[in-house]
Length: 99
Image: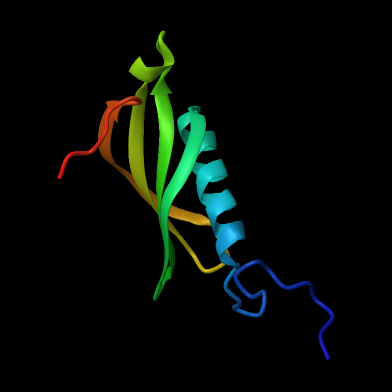
């Protein structure tokens, strides 16, 4: 019987829960981009792990409603490690989507 420590990839193959995946998506993206974290606006389980839409503050402006925000799609593995990200759009913080 081996007593070697398991790596993250081997860690029982379990998927982290939604709150953990949300925190990790936001934290890892803001660390990479060096931007102020905003919020996670969407989160879903995928076959390969997790997909999250994360809002970040890209440019601080005064007044605050003029700050430039960006929405990023983040892909995480089942353990919550960032695999990829892409910017979906940029917008003023005070902007409301019209449909």
